[in-house]
Amino acid sequence: MKLTASSPAGDSRGACALPRRISPPFPLLLTTLPLFATVPQGLAQRWQAQYALRADAPPVAYPEFTLCILRHKRRAQDPALNWLVTKLKQAMRGQ
Image 1 (cartoon, rainbow, N blue to C red):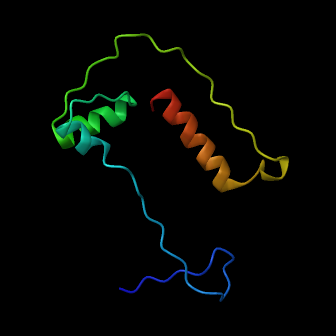
Image 2 (cartoon, rainbow, N blue to C red):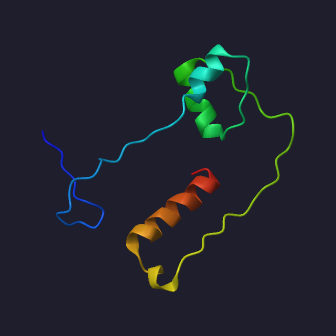
């Protein structure tokens, strides 16, 4: 199967790189060095399962925070942006 992509403008100026997820190797560093990390619970659970790391509750209470999403009124009815906002709200609620 051949994958192709057009430029961000969608024209014939040339192919662009296909999207890919790039992340630093934090879990691998945690397995080899005497370090700790404060990460969201869902990520901690995945790292614990994938990399045999130990997860503990933080020794301090973290204050709650409010998610504020600002967007231009022209984008108020954008289905893709509305989907993203819904997903962010669900993630903040732990759903």
